[in-house]
Length: 86
Image (cartoon, rainbow, N blue to C red; front, side, top):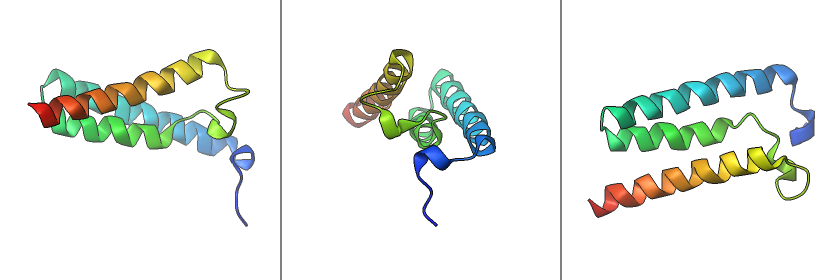
């Protein structure tokens, strides 16, 4: 059976939130330690465990969640460009 985004169990979203926060914090810690490559990896992995329902990104998603996801993506892209340019 294929799970649609609306049929994801609440426990899974709680786990996703925890994993998202862990990867986000590891990315920030590596940014502080100036290890850009590892920071980009952790920040990009964090985007895979977003605790929000992304199936309705364009219509029903709250503005702060859209802003957070767009900002997170732009940070990862910006850091990748910075790494490749430097």
